[in-house]
Length: 79
Image (tube, rainbow, N blue to C red):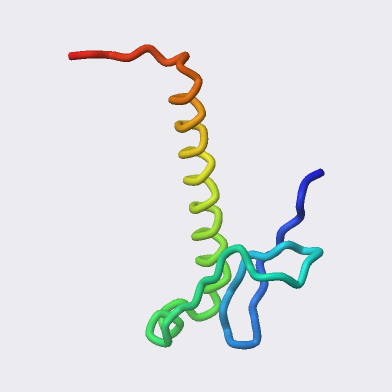
């Protein structure tokens, strides 16, 4: 079963990634400074989404590298 996630804005202005069916602690929190909000305007949601997607992609890539290293299928190269 796959979990569904949503990006939402909390009452305090934080943008979070949370499970859609739970009221628990968010998985990711992003809080922009007042100065950055001045420059971002309405783009803060797009920037937050891009940040979350980049983080998930990086975690996926790192996990794949760790699994590959653990499998022993990758030959060691000595120079």
